Image 1 (cartoon, rainbow, N blue to C red):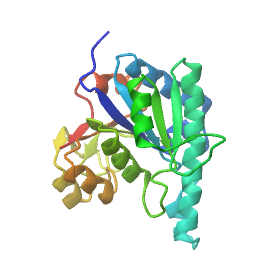
Image 2 (cartoon, rainbow, N blue to C red):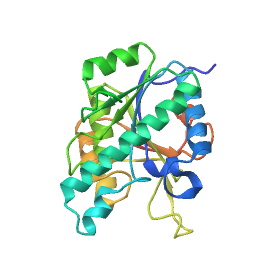
Image 3 (cartoon, helix red, strand yellow):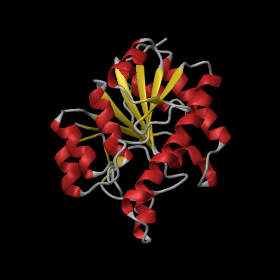
Length: 237
């Protein structure tokens, strides 16, 4: 078994990733595959914290653009992340991976409240911790929640698993001449307006020197490769 190059990571998954090819909701085959990939990475001994978006169920920003109150729509988005978190917890536990869900909004019947020291203790005991409900505050994305939780648990890297295999200078789905970066600085990401994460999350990582790694989640085994230090995707440093 290959050894991990990190002791502790924060893995950010987009909600859309759980929808698979159906485009919305939760795809059972997709979530099973993601759980298997996470299990393979976890078996190396790395400690894993997880943050999942809710875009496959509800997008607060989109609802806000259509006239809904932004704070209300953001709280609905947070509840969507809780649904995804419970679904992924179930998939991981079916793979015999011990998992805890901690929610930034209190929901005693379905999840523990987010308590930093308790989360770290779970990680030390080899459990995967899924951080649900974003930061618990409207106007902040799950990207920002991922950056915040990564720093709170002292993760060495924030891994963002997306639908593309890294960061490009322009949209690779629209432009065939798009160039992929192997490494790029936080400042360049902000200056070029690259859609890696929102600017709040990038700035937070930059201020605290937390590297961000982005890679393609759809490719089986990529989480394992990222954990053992293989060169995949793009690193923001």
